[in-house]
Image: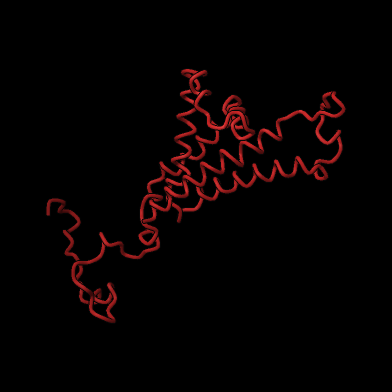
Length: 190
């Protein structure tokens, strides 16, 4: 069930990267234009904290990055949540390296800001870097196990076949153990 939820989260992460991340990236990348001439600095060289366009763009990009980071970092979440979109981004980057025209042709909504931003992130290598970070949880073995097994709780596979008596601890029979006989110091073969 955990991995099924992780698959659903993978779809949400992919949508956040495509819509939020690419829109914000494109808006931050654009050179501002005032009165028909290009301005080299955003916000006319003033404070970016007062420029609403920059704040909205940064917010969208930060929200997408935060969702990716939470899905990649929290061990409770299945590694599929960040890993599947990461594999898709790496695959698209490899496809772009092999055949640029064909890879770019299949980017959805290329006429909108979302597709343009996604294309810009692909061109600049941002998708490759993000994809490499997102696949890291796939290679951590503890992320694939049930979280109860890490906390010391028995998993269904590790549960004993017979139920333990009520009120007994696994270490309660240690008082009845006998020491292992030791060989004399000169006798190594026993």
